Length: 399
Image 1 (spheres, helix red, strand yellow):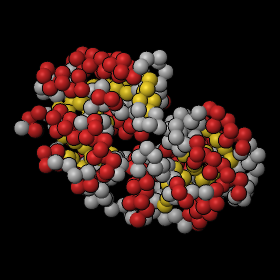
Image 2: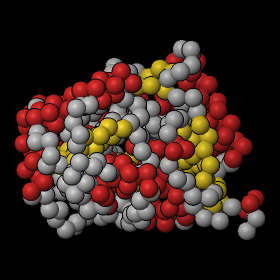
Image 3: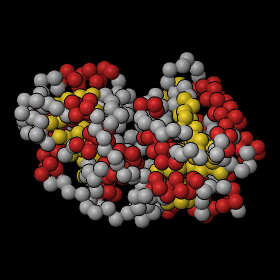
Image 4: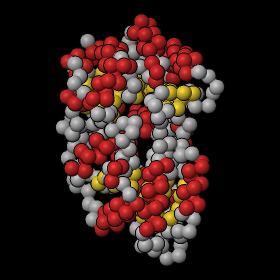
């Protein structure tokens, strides 16, 4: 098949905060990639190119947004007011749609994009690319039902899903969390839902020398259990880091190895403070970011992490039962996920209201002794199901 004959898939990654959205899009794109497919991912993550992409996957990187604690968005680096900046990004996206002419559009989480920036492109597709099959992908848990009801009404999300999209992926198992029931979706939208399963992939672990070197501590520590503390993107991890550092200062210094990955978006000031605070611990290392996170998770005896969707799936795929420190602001998503899966035996967690250096130190010590993962009894073939659906998505399927 010639290049011009390849099916074209356009992905839009909602990635104003952390790494989860772009990693989810990349996993699906890499699984989908083949000689017969041409895939363009529109995103603004500064770390998009730090992860391996298969041949056939390209990126259109937009100038980035930053999400404030108020929930509002501002330009990350450019000196532009929010309205002009949104229009700028929106026109870039529309130009990509007009020129790339996708056969399938897969949008992550936000049906109208950040601040509604996708609406002109969705209108263009509706009028001019009538064979383009539109899909919006939602993670298993979005937030509390009360908050989603308010947020979706304000943003017009439910209307947009009904009007512009042919299908809606739910990256989860309906028996674990019934998204339609929890968020009281209308019948038209319920009929578009595809519960594809959790995005858990078979992991091919090929550890590079630099990773092996990172896990070497010397001084008789290299045979000790490894505890990995990871905070995802790190943009909102400074409070957790303080508790983690204080807990490590309480613990015996020669019983374990500790590795803290703060995330690339942790402010440099906070990173320097933590490095200085822990400088006297020979059994503890800090770094900001690695693209080999799955290799390190695989080597860890215990993973302590926040409760984001991708991190949770990564742990499950590597047969790890994590200790989750969920954030509860600006969303309850992570706390809800931690609560549900802890009852099923797939994680432990400490609610922020109960998190102290003592509670963290005690629980990590206990979990190193007893932390077996039960047999997985829910749908974990989301990547395969999503990709098979994408490959066969045409307007004829929706008639």
